[in-house]
Length: 107
Image 1 (cartoon, one colour):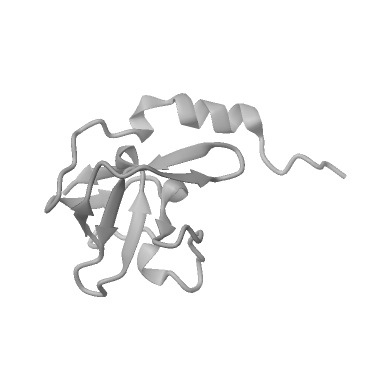
Image 2: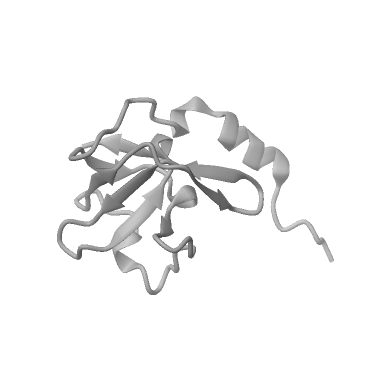
């Protein structure tokens, strides 16, 4: 049985690929869309759950609003540690999330 659940070469390729990172500065009040869900967590640091967090399923009509920037939370995603520097909120459900700013783009 293979104990390595992840292909580290594949993961490193994705992490190093600039197209998965958006370098535009995001500020409070900006509308954003999520490009990469790997660094998104609930405000308490809990990982997303595919069944419970239906609004986080990829949907090009769902957007979020930046309500805090320059944050410094760490999220250990097993294969890497993300710096979550934004807090975003769904304007309809009012649910807040933490995310790495490179994983969202301006809408």
